Image 1 (cartoon, rainbow, N blue to C red):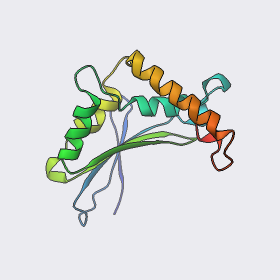
Image 2 (image 1 turned 30 degrees about the vertical axis):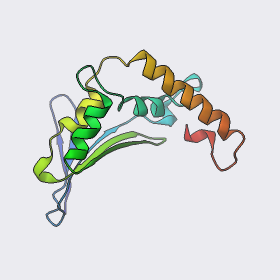
Image 3 (image 1 turned 120 degrees about the vertical axis):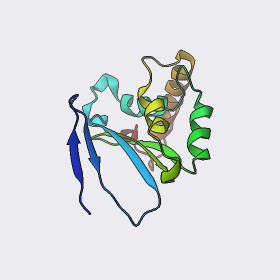
Image 4 (image 1 turned 180 degrees about the horizontal axis):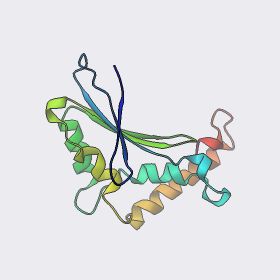
Length: 141
């Protein structure tokens, strides 16, 4: 197995690896921004944006996106670390198309203000809980 790196004219780098023994297809989008890149007044922003990516777009609701990927026998998820934020999808190769992951994460110029406020409130509650529960570190947010 070898990984091939292709750089598009836009500068976007694509890493591909064929794994013939697997019967699934995966697509990951890794953004080089995580919690380490946030200023003090931005703590939690990368994680918040990760959550907002799945709230739907102007053309597709969050439910539409979830049903599309689940109908394809797959799953769609994301994770934020100190170094990057990753968005990824796993599906059966016969039903795979990149719209399933690119639309929820990159097909928007703004977020719905109601959903944004709801997520911000949720993050504030998690942060408050983390200060009273030693098993959860506020650095997770």
